[in-house]
Image (tube, rainbow, N blue to C red):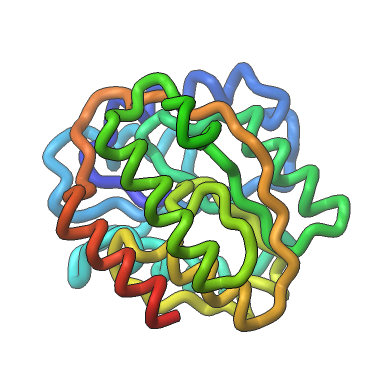
Length: 222
């Protein structure tokens, strides 16, 4: 879980986790990567959930945070690995669905927030709605499979799958790389609908046009 100025979202996730059925599982370990530029109480709140906290100081960006987390995970790898954002937009019930899919034999699972080009998800701006659909369409053509939601921040992998994928992206083009690597490694992909909600507190780090262009280039390159 990558974090930068997500105190409010983390507090919500901690509260909801404690009331979720996942809280009863003893085999969960949380690795949270906190960007050293965070100016709020993100690191302190992370301690309420994390088994391991990584201070991201030398390199920044979502992709680099996930790489740091995977590196830490690989020291004592579990059979499954789930990636999610810390802004409160994803819910534990959907995380549980991802885990269940993996435990049932799936190798790679991603959550689908989008509900079709004519149905905008509540809380998602029109610009992001259209951008997400345009990028998903481009990725579908490039990957020769229907990709319903390219930029979803909720993913799950088996140990073997994430080891084969070994992502290298530094920023928000991470998800586009994951889709490309899943294709090139011939890993079956399961896409499940999830309930997305607008971020809780903080501000989005995504720069619509700059990062959108980088994501598009990553689609073409991977």
